[in-house]
Image (cartoon, rainbow, N blue to C red; front, side):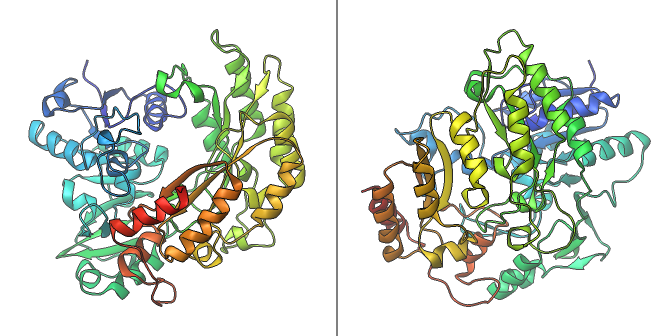
Amino acid sequence: MEYDIIFVTGELYFDHPLCGVAILKRWLEKHGFTVGIIEKPVKEEEITKLGKPKLFFGVTSGTIDSMVRNYTPLKRLREDDDHVDYAEKVPDRAVSVYSNWIKHMFKGSIIVLGGTEASLRRFVHYDYWQNRLRKPILFDTRADIMAYGSAEKQVLEIASRIKKGKDLFGIEGTCIITKELSGKELPSYDDVMNSKEKFCDMQNMFTNKADLIQKIDNRYVIQYKFPKYTSKDLDEYYELGFTRKAPKELKGFEFSVVTHRGCVGNCNFCSVRLLQGDRIISRSEESILREVKKITKLRHFKGNIDDLSGPSANMYGMDCNKCGRDCIDCDQLDVSNKRLLGLLKRIRGVVGVKKLSIRSGIRYDLASPALVDEIAKYHVFNDLKIAPEHVNENVLKLMNKNRGNLKEFVKYFARTGRKLSFYFMTAHPGSTMDEAEELARVVKRLRNAEKVQVFTPTPMTVSTCMYYTSMDPKTKKGIYVPHSYAEKKRQKRLVFG
């Protein structure tokens, strides 16, 4: 069979709404395109197994950056870590590797990049693993275009244009190389190579809401602003005809339901803002209920909905587009959790649902007492996960996580008789041994610190800018940064000790 589009992905493919490539495949097929999948190729010749597509190859390493997947925060190979069950076979810089294989085996093929790894390398970026700046990924791969974010609208428009023989300029939510200067200009490649202050300026200008352009030698990479996604769009995507068969690695989340996209938290170490946006887009309650009812009809469903998932479960229903301010600091943000509470109660009433768990956790500073009580009574799996990340006020400010009262939340939740587990981070910019010691004292007192991770600088985040420049990009004031492996290990040992 000759396919219109062939996706090459660094992850397992499964026909489920938790698999991004599956959504794209189903969406394209709904519009009349034929789609093939090559999953986890490890040799160049595997790229040829489905032949050459009529329209284009779509290349992604998946939802996780291949370098984050393959290496620990201390740059050790995860496959060499005796404490981790690691069986991945994804090449380093998988997007570039797959693209080069295609260029070699199928000269003249159109290549469309997508996924987390490509999206966060759309401009000049700091590469932690090489400890240097790299050019945008379109220059490394010589691909034709890159679609950032989840990309349903972008991929469909790209396929339609190629089929009609049209050019690929001006598609919202994409990046392309051009010789024309158009859009808001970021500091150039030469600028940021020669000045860390210019790198900070570039970081401060990053947004999905505008056309941005950056000069690289004698050409430009242009980002077209992100397309508008609506609740109706998400309802349509997540109600496509998935079989929902999941690999054994994901059996614990086989019956999860995605409820929304976007995040209002704007944590400085997180990239969701530049992938899904800084506004919440919630699916309709009716769409979610239809999906739950379909799940109850599956033969192997035993009555347990594994999770309601999104960047944070309790941001469901916090949709607002009234102004341009950060939602997290806006007094107009509805933090009552009323829509989520109503949804939880309706799902509990669906015939065939015995248990609905919230396994991926909540943002505790945005959880109303009514929601906490509801979750504690009906929706805790083994424990409720929260991610305070740190306890020192200065470090929390640098993370943009200095909201809420952890002590009060822990005290309130203890009344429910259920267990909390905590995620923390050490060696973030601003963390000296003193801050690590302060964190260690709290972790020992809390006991259930499920995970304490060392900060990993990933492209395009504010925290990575701090790590590379040793400055707060907004103020240009100096920040202490634990750069040496020795100190990072000491901070982690202190917290775990």
